[in-house]
Image 1 (cartoon, rainbow, N blue to C red):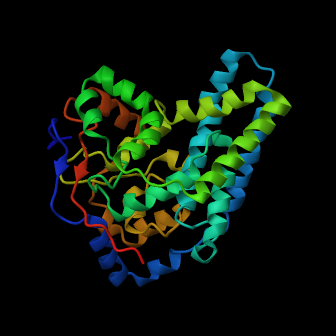
Image 2: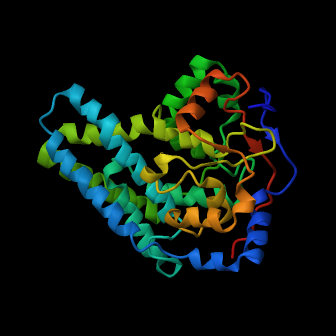
Length: 322
């Protein structure tokens, strides 16, 4: 690609995020898109099936050798767990039970969290709201790497290490960039998660616990599905801060690849985002998009002009809480 960004600092802009205006224009032209908003009636059943599939896997791996524990964690279990984290992403927008049943969505996210092995869903919800409201916001959007990450992870080997350590940075960065008080839902999330972990350990031993947690860490690090972390908002072309991906891995990731469409309409379930693109095709067909998450990871590592600094940042005013 041409017109790449330069290394050394973030790309500072002094305009509003583009999604708000595009959302207004699309809704004015295609009001029927509002009919796509609301809960996905199939989501809760798909997620429940994935959770119980992982519980079955815990039983099946309990007597395997360690090398096969890690093999199946990376090749199978981690893919399911990564997909569940993206289901939690969808659920954080209340698309499992709808906005009128917000608590049901929070509780169901805790259930979806169980195979991940560590509490995640409640903290994700708390910070993900800011990612949409203050996209690229300095000290507000914790999806953006820190200055240290941008400065240090700037060579191919270091960027490869950064990709491997992504789960660590994603979990610790919010505590440094934008610390928030622990909520009751986070405490509930942790109590339920560790209780289920203990039950699995009591029934089947340590290997199933390692299978779950190792799968989560490995598949949210250096793994083809993790290409979405880079593909979504890293500026591969100057002036564009959000990108979609329309490839087959969307089948495993609740259409998280339709990321431009998602930021335009976060209340539309992932299953219906392809319909947004179809209805408002002229708004999306001419925007840059990624064709391969593996290619995204390759370019990120080996292209000197792309790295953790390749993000748009802006100063945002805090919205007044209602």
